Image 1 (cartoon, rainbow, N blue to C red):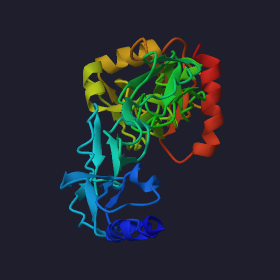
Image 2: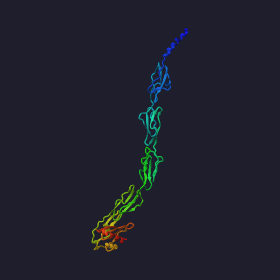
Image 3: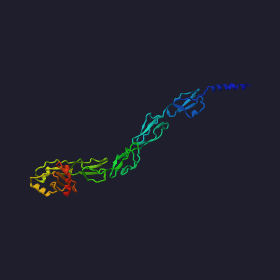
Image 4: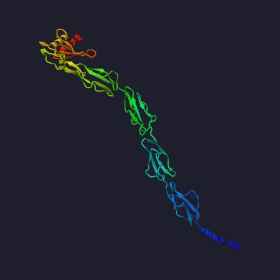
Length: 381
């Protein structure tokens, strides 16, 4: 009986020892340090046990131990120091730069940028993660679509136009280029200007009043030329040659009538020689270098030298009872006809004799014009 009662007394010292070893509560951590995956699964932490700690996501160990100890129900201080992961400068690829506004630590964003004429392919933004920079990016040369050919023209272009490539255009004969003769592939994959066009330029048949066209025949396409001369008795103002431009003909010449001042009749005609007559009585005609001879007929002559007598004798034609006219062929191109007692008809010959140009040397213009023209039709041929 005595031995049985002794058992509780023997167990009492062991119980007192066990009650002195208290457990630690579940560790509560904050900041950049967390329990490891192994320690976080434990349900209890006995005295003198350890719990393992590590840096939170996005952080890495800087210094300090990675464990804490349970001593008499209290955890030892956490001495692990963690710092943010630094992804460092991103790797630079050809024709690429980076905008880094917030640094290169965990969570920061950077933006890749390409040089002018290159397109970004991949991520527009990259973020610093535990494993490094997210995504990928590269810069590729900008391409433009192959341009369509133009009608009535030619195009010279590379097989695949890229940034700064130039495409040139030219037109077929009788067509003019409207627009730029070349276009350039731009930095955004678009051309610097629209394609030009080749347009047929054709001008209408030009006409000059009181003048004839001597050179140039229709059709008149772009840059064609037409040259003119004035009728006898008319003087040219402006250039004799006009050019067919995009907007039509350049300035056409103008043929103005040459005004002949009548001379006073003389009772004596004294012309020493033909040379003297042309020197004293010539006017520029039509801008062609021809000479207009002005002869004043007389009613009668009491004195006529031999040179004049020979000239008029050889050239006199009768045309009725109205007057005694004469025609004088000064050269193979110029014929003067005197009629109506004071009218002068001028014939100018190129291939055939021209229509007459009457000049009234007195005041009988309306009365004598018809007679003057009739005289020409009856006697000049």
